[in-house]
Length: 50
Image (cartoon, rainbow, N blue to C red; front, side, top):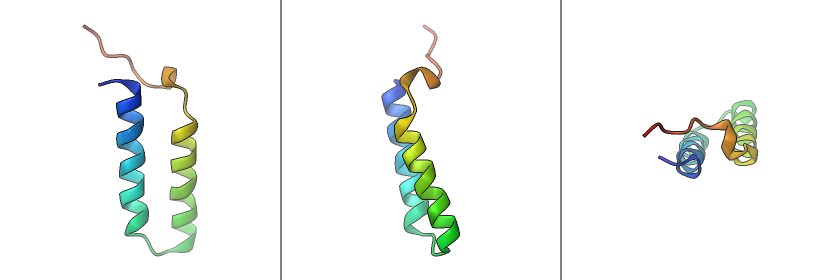
């Protein structure tokens, strides 16, 4: 799985959590997680070994 795939899956997960969360403080935290995840460089993810 490539770093781009991991990033996409993480963002999709946070978006699903955000969609079912109603608490405004939690929503802000999750939205921040999405922004941070999108800003992560590919080198922040593990590289699969052959």
